[in-house]
Length: 412
Image (cartoon, rainbow, N blue to C red):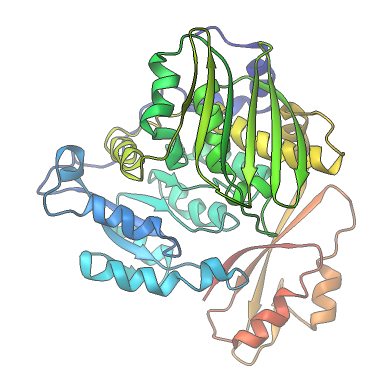
C-alpha cells in the first residue's frame, strides 16, 4: 500500500513505530498445545470484560485457537478514586477464581506463571504502569480500551514495546463486528466515500472525553474509513458530541457521541454503490478470536499507526472543544504530547498515614506544593504506594492533595 503524506508526517513524529509493522515475535518458549496451552494473565478485574473473556477462553468445549490459550491468573488492580473501577474489582475476581484463575496480589508475583497478559483495567490511567513490567519481562500484551490515560502514555507504551521488542495490541471490540469488518475489507457498498459512526459517550473526569466510552464509536469510524485523518473539529453539548474528521483524501468521517436517549452502537457508510446502515455490535467473541491469534502468532492484527491515529483523534477532539470547535490536526497533538516534560513520582504511605516522597516525609500541604507544576508543558504523574495499609480516609486525603499531578497507579 502506498504510504500517505499524512502518515509520513506521523512517522516523522514517531518513527519508532515502524518496527512493529509486519514483525513477528517469539511469544512462548514452546509451541502452545491443548495439553500445554499459552498461559494468559489478566491485570485489572474491574470490568465485565473479564468474566466474558474467561468464559470464552476457558470453555470446556473450546474449539480452534481457544484450545491452545487459557486464562490462568489475574491481579485485581483498581483505582480508589473511580467507583466504576474500585467497586467491581472484587466482584469479578470472585467470579473468575472458580474457573481456573489464580488471583495474585501483585503483577510481579503473577508474571513468572504466565506467557502473556491482558491489561483489562476499566480505568485507562494505570494501563502504562500495568503494562510496563510485562513488556520489560518480554511478554506480549493486549491492552483493552482505552490504550492509555492520555496520548503521551500511548506513545510511551509503544516506545517500551519497541525497546524491548515485544508485541502489543489494543482495540475496542466494536472493531471486529461483522458489518464493520465487511466495510473495511470487502465492502458491498463500493468505495467508501464517508462514514458516520455513533456510540454511547459517557464521560469520566479523569480521562480525555472520548477515551472513557466514545472510543468504541471512534474505533468503528476508523475501522471503516481506514487511517489518514488529518484534523478534527468538535461540537459539544451536555448530552451529545459531534466530531468531524477530515481525511487527507478529502473524505469526511464523523463520530456522534450520545449521552441521552437511545445510546446504541452503529454507523452509516456512504459508498459509491449505495448508502447503508452498518456497524452494529456483535459481542466480545470476534475480538477474543483476534486476541487468541495475537498470543499464538506474536503479531498485532492492527497497524500501530492506526491505533495512534485513533488516540490522537480523540485527543484532538478535546483540543477542538477547548478552542470552540476549531479544526485541530492530529500531527499537532502528537507533537505536543512528545514535547511534554514528564515526571513520575511514587508517593508512599505508612500504616499510620505518614506521607513520603523521594525519601522525605511531607505534610499534605507540602505534598501539594511539591506536585504543583512550575512549567505549563509539564506532566506530573503519581503512583500511590499503600502496601502498608493506611486507611481509606488517609488515601482519599492524599488524592485530593496531589496538586497538578495525575494519579496513575494504586499499589495496595
